[in-house]
Image (cartoon, rainbow, N blue to C red; front, side, top):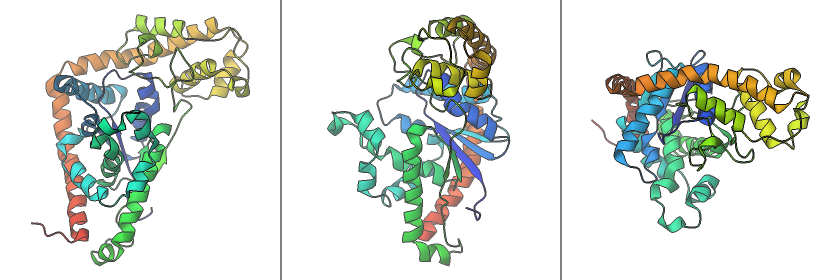
Length: 345
């Protein structure tokens, strides 16, 4: 790892209706990491089309994710924000990595099995090959660190396996072209914070999701203060007061989820939250959570709405980011072609 310059890469799918889970599970990490690392943040629109998309909706969703990045505090001048489809090297490297990855590796990917369900024969090849495109997203920048949620850890492990196999398969060529022992790094996962997996406000055993039919299951980043307050107050709880220690949350998924959300929004620990609210009734705790949620999320939602309405600004951020990303991606892809033995201009 020492031979590679530290670089963070991560992507967010433009699937619409960004919610608290996206914010706490990913975007807040992005904001924090930009203080210590060079960062590349990508709106992964090529991943989005692995399932059917309505074109105008997809356009709006790309802009919404970009607005969320900026509204949350990511600086598009210091770091790179772009949409994946503007940098063709992602798809080009994905093909090379399709020829590196083994079929058995992809057959073990649990997320494909979950998304494809029983109708596996009718899903797109893209959904199956999604993990190799994700590997290309990371490796085309030779990124060393990737902030991921628990559900993406298996895909990152695959990216590491693919990088290692490419390095082993072409070791002699890599060395002869002056790249040392390894061309690709083995990217490390960054899993941080007390709310890496935010659950539904209606069911503490289900992940917060935009696909849940109940809007009360999630807090959308564009919700206003009244909507946020209503959803927190209606969040499912149990009749017992909050425990004073974390062990008391183990059999209480809804309580654990709300305490985790409070801890993440206040940038503290669950233990500290319970030290303050232990033995309190949920009504008292929820009032405090309403105030905190509105204070933290309200300004982000307002700024997102303002930015989304300014198409020319959002599109200019993406254009600038894609130009800067392309320089790095093209350099990697040219080197990959040399290692493979391709003839290029």
